Length: 282
Image (cartoon, rainbow, N blue to C red; front, top):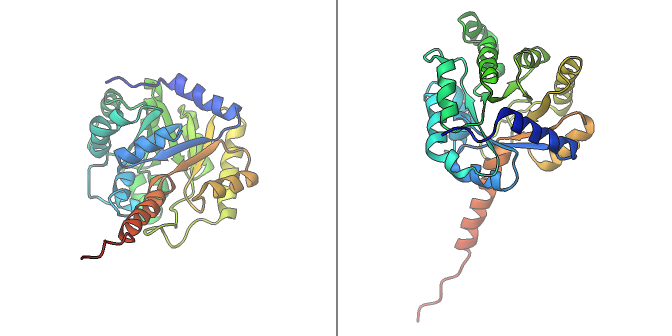
């Protein structure tokens, strides 16, 4: 199955939204039903990856950073067997473990494209890993540069590309190889039943996104820049953050796109059914 949105078409659609004063909204979904409803609700893109899959199994999305599944095989299967069949109204993007040393990622990108995905991104990403483990990954060829290399390859293939970045240097590296959408990552959210207890403060988040936007402004001002995670968990949070940093083009929802709504609505449905009284016998 060939992809449904060309890179040029999708980029133009996103830029038209921005010109018309509407923010880009992307939903990171781990199940067919949440992806289907997000698309129907007006999401500009739906993306899946192993973190979202674990989130929709009731676990922390951080499980996607543990060696408990083949992240890329999972994304490929979700696309082929579920998502391309139910996401009709918007583009579909594959989140890939770009540093996977067990695959020829150039050939794997062809399989992703053939499955019907319109684009790719780096998720899980080593951008969120620090310390000795991060340095070991970098020194053994599984660092952020490998993510840049794979997304650059995808861009040259004509796929839409977007990248999680946590610093100006990472954003510039991705922009240099043609990545269309830079997503400034603020780390985990805290809401709901399995959120982190600590999140990146709003002031630190503002400085992070500001330094990225400043770095891109000279040479890559045409890039679409969105944000994800941290303390931004509701539309009201995002609206308030836009007043602080109005140069942003949109928001990428993860837990806020599927886990928070489900945790609320499913509980309420169960409670309402249990509140019904049975007729008295006799």
